[in-house]
Length: 214
Image (cartoon, rainbow, N blue to C red; front, side):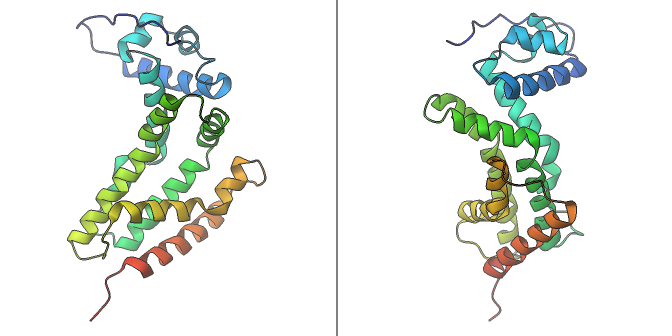
């Protein structure tokens, strides 16, 4: 059963960013340690060393906090600037930057633990799965679609279906290594191994989608 909502305080003093950060960090740790169902807002408040009312003043309910915690993990590794195309950067440089950020994100401790948690609850809680997908994978994919569409508009890439191309790009980046990590059958890549893998994926992607001369 979902936890009962607590009415948030009305307009008053601005919310403390440090407390919000502490709440998000506590939520990440507890959701990973005890799962979504095993984590209460009381426990998150205690872990963050704030009052329960403070937690609800920042996040109206546990679903909202769960989605925000996932976004927080994603944004730490892939902030919006990863999807911006600076004039001095060519397409390959941009794709390398996005690719490395994505690999660091999906192969990190928090992301692997979240994926294992969702797989362990597959079919039991569709709403939880939807929250995870929309806050994490969907957000990253939407950012990539915008990158690809801008590149198409500038004539840098030739793509008929940017959404499908974005999904192909990220699936290639995940590759076999991410699956081996998920099942505990491999060790994290070194920085050099990760860069080499991303470079190979970017080269494949550009060979497929670069405009053909003539």
